[in-house]
Length: 365
Length: 264
Image 1 (tube, chains in turn green, red):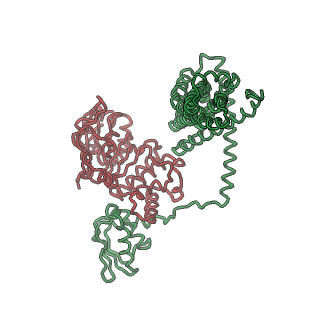
Image 2 (tube, rainbow over the protein chains, first blue to last red):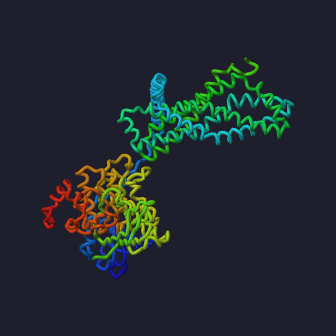
Image 3 (tube, rainbow over the protein chains, first blue to last red):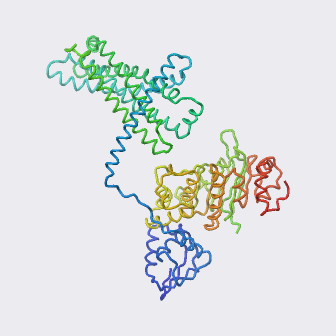
């Protein structure tokens, strides 16, 4: 670009390729800014001009063609197109001062909708379960067994590992406290009651909610994206019967088994830690276990497993079916599903604790 | 005028034992609109993906804008990718970004364009493809099929590419939207003077836009030329594709302007 007394000759490459070099646009803009309204412009020697270059010049000229200008017909055409375009500003959304209120209202309404949809789903499921029991041969057995394998068998490793480590930690910390009171031998009783009744089911449920709950939601969500859900509906196959029922049944069956497995792993961890910290022999630990774990606590633990499993399956399916056909919704739905499932599991656990407060605990019943 | 922008020589593609292309050669010249046609499974989209370096051929040479794709360094590849735009079949808009941000993304990725210019360019591009300023804040999920294609086209064009690739540009659009889109591409082609490589099944789009047609069959290009030239070639695929009932109808509409094809 050359400036001569009152004239500006624009030459060279004004295309994306040369303008995208660092600092190039700023430098050319500084040079362009030296021109005045009376400047005569000469663009006839311009080698290349594309939309970016045209916009740089156009802005420098204040969005109109200068009075004194020499340019080729094809370049003039580019600027004619630009002048024909509305100078539209990007509409921006200003934050609403009452936005928090809108958000709160939307949150509550949305929560209500979720609760309603969940109850509807539960209703459907009860009907489907009735049909399943009266016509067991027509049930989705293959799907159920596949789900049990995926949710139950494939989760054995992670639940065992986590259960074992929690058992070790719990036993180690309790042993330190108990030994200061000389109450070492109560360790078995403490571990037995807390793990079987409370920790085992809760640990298994949280792991399954994170592992299988998210998988179920994502799978159903992708089926929405690929219109598989619509295809099922068109064929007259109910989502509830073919998709939800197998998952709920599978989790209801697999969860108590996983609870049992987690209990065993946690007790094993506790036993090893007890041997290391208190010198308690495995023989003693095993001998004391039957007294520490009552039948009723065992039953409560299993019952919790079933209840947690059904809760997780219902919530995961619910969020999966509500995913909208875009990628953001899929991520958000999966997160919501896992968070809600874990919260719900803890709520259900609290209900169990209150309802069964007087059952199976020493000193009370 | 006849400068080649894409040169493909002796290309071979195979998925396991299944050979898709064998000894395929094709040249695309500057400024033309070349259409790739062929039956399902003839490897049109695969060929397109190899030209834009998404897939690697098993053998052969692909040269785009004088760069050999197989020997390209990562940096050169990035630089080359700025000189082409691709319109994917389903649009492939980023669903977490607004229309504006989708079109602005390639510009912002350069990191050297000031934000005020980015805004000017994006709004100008949106206007060119027939979208209004109020569409700029919409999300891809709020757009109709035709609008998605327009936004995707605006995004493909946002870097002023020398080369534009269209994969089934009118698939999924109703005939009227499809005609509008064809007119839009033709107008932009006249203005911005890019070269177009297009994959399409739609005879109307094909005949309305292409300056040359390349027919893929028998694992290679069996014919390449204007519609009339291609029609002279005696091959079963060309007979069924162009001279079937649908083909005759589309050609009949073409006849007033181009009477030379002569035999039916």
